Length: 189
Image (cartoon, rainbow, N blue to C red):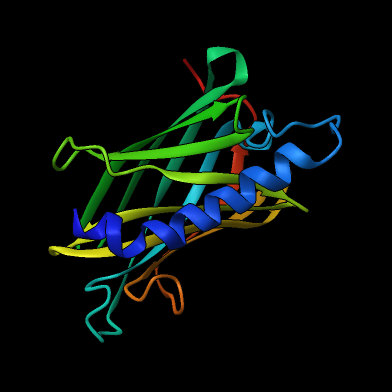
């Protein structure tokens, strides 16, 4: 409950600003529903993960593998399966992204095969070729904010970064960096 009181106004402001800009603007040909269309397919994924976020540690580990992105719900959602391995182990997870036509925003939900639990979603969309998504979460019992950014998007590659903030979004620490390179356009069933 404390995290809602502590970061609720900051997150609420970020989401309200995003929703306000979408709802007050003249209707655009692209309402955001196709923001992830570029990603459908199979990707080679290189990941760097900060071992102990928000601890002052700068120890990173690296992984490589694949991400497979499938369109579901007639393109208003997609499902990603991530499988990467490195010297410290494996990461196997899935991400479900859902589009809300009323808010004209996407929400991104992640689950790891390690614990089978969904993380809290982050919310946002794409503007000028860049995706930004924000949401509250907890890390080791502390209320934090999560920022997920997708940038450098082209037909064959993209850059993903996740960062945490423990001060309401004033400062951010990047803890996940992934670079995807396209292997094929359509994933196999």
